[in-house]
Image (tube, rainbow, N blue to C red; front, side, top):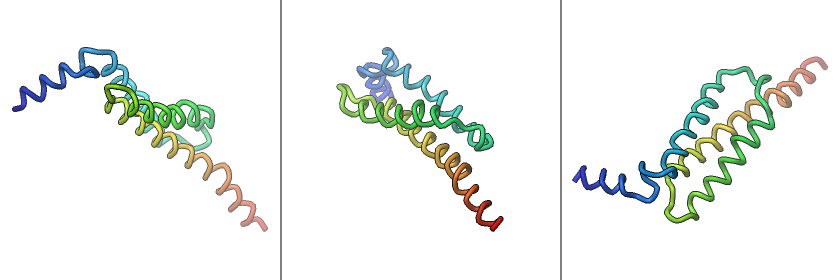
Length: 109
């Protein structure tokens, strides 16, 4: 049973014999790098990088991966991860830039 599933994966149009498998697989490195950056101070987070590279790219490619034939679930999963990490980093940056500053100004009054 396991060999038939491996054979099906191997021969899939988006399987390991194609670029459609390897490109999203290596794209996981970018998502992992963004996860590692969760420990980075919020003032070092870049709005353009998080909006463009992670959030929008992740949202666009996750949609695209479900409408192409064959559906590329590896691309879908890495794109959702990219969008999620980008949104989380944007949340951290916005909270640092706007919410914490508003609290500081209110505390001074």
